[in-house]
Image 1 (cartoon, rainbow, N blue to C red):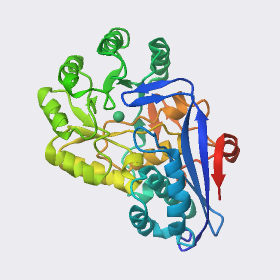
Image 2: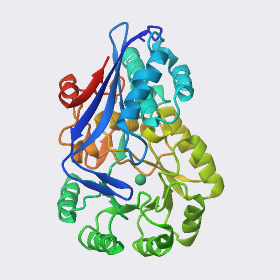
Image 3: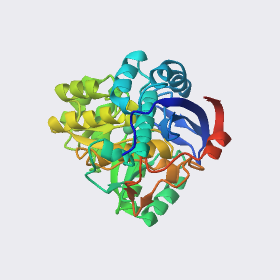
Image 4: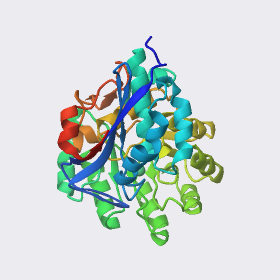
Length: 375
Ligand SMILES: [Mg+2]
């Protein structure tokens, strides 16, 4: 075992703009051109490094500028000079030091775990309690405003052995959603289909549209209405046998408790970028399971570092049974930032067994895509 008593002596940050291969439309907004993330590197006095990634989205969780400032100004003083083994204390202080900014806290938690894992020669999943699975089924989202391009993507996914897709709905008209569901049912019957509105439905249109879509019997229908519409979510849940998932309505354990008590969902999309860390994400899953609710491993517009952090979290969380959506490194970014590729084989994400997160960010790519950096 290495020495977790050693101090953290440096924190470096990169705000990156990563070019993407296509536009993607979600109910709450569009991503095109590039997605922006913040990468964090911690260095311990023995020279070991730990990486984390904050993957915000302005219309959903927050901005890259806020993630960067939270880390650079408000969380840095909690980290420099502290022992590597002080993760739980540092994260507790981080929760109090700056409100919201859950992506920055997820990045910090990832980097602390990666660093401790590198030093103790253990994978992050071992530091989170051990692993319950070696692979995680991958779901890829179908969200291109150019549906012909998505048909080509689905052909590629089928050839790659991916068995799950999530159709993003509610960003154009209802007929477009139904047309796509009909085509997928006819031409791609191999796929299990999930539907995600990303809050895209207005109050007056939610009931008929959700009932229409439910006739296609997707695995679940995710977040049809605005995050704060808890009562409407509960009503929609009662109208259909298709499971209703909460995503934007549930960030951390506190929201999960409220969602369970108010009966707004049959399951929840769990993301380290919403919960503010890997341990808090595990807590969300455990609260959900204790209330008889399902859990899915969601993500934001992430690169490989955040995918890895989520993979280790899910590997150590048996309550997350619906697979994951860590597809961006393979199917959305022009180029990922990892030194060795994020592993997806035959439609399954491979849980790494190496120390820490199991792969590192490539320093040359960090410099190449940086729009701002500090150390
Ligand atoms: Mg979602």
